[in-house]
Length: 303
Image (tube, rainbow, N blue to C red; front, side, top):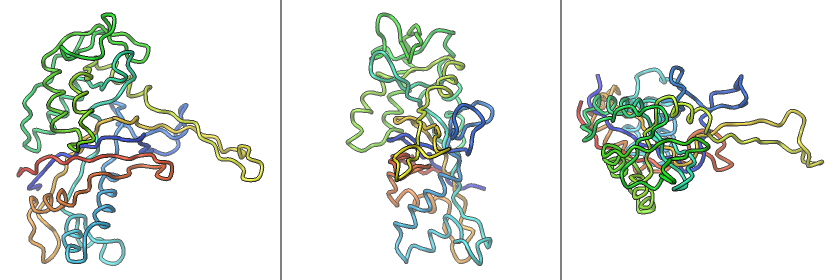
């Protein structure tokens, strides 16, 4: 069983393409999504693989045994001798940015997403000082009392107008996320100040529809080097999570399974978070600047 746990927050800095392969719909290369809700996510295998790659680049030879205890053996002979102690979960959606008539953009979420976050936080022993608000009525949106999004008595996201409903709970949620979930570096001062004025809790169906239809979709081509025209068949569309999306993933750890290593789950997680892996490239299209993500680690807790 797991001995320790934490939360990993992932703030998307450039559009993120965590692809699911060739799509059957209008987009050739869609992003990964939950089967039931349709929410975008980044699968746990991608998160774990990136953390391992970054850790391997940072540790010195003396810390190599700790790395192997954390992630498991390297490929090759003995690769199945034991399992790694660390277990990241899927990176789930928490805040989704949507273009706004006032305030440039809004961070949107829903009661469903907030309730899942509270449940996941409870599983790892994290006490969150707020509760999910009631689900807003159709056509309404919950906002903080002193928000930047209301214009002419409406909150207009993309081409859809919502009647704003002032909520102190939304303000409390936004202030907590700004303090605990957004990156703590000084270059994020603006975003931490903006979040309490730009958070919107939408009706469930409206939020789901924004996550389905308000992602970034880019058309790309490959040119023939001689003629500088599009090569036959080399025209495709790909979907990305927009910049300023906030995801979260649980990090859990067992006691080391590696022979000769007696590290506890807490020691495993503290070693992982102490590597200062604070910014990574995640997903595809690395060579065109996609997928830069800033990481923030929550407090390690015994479970």
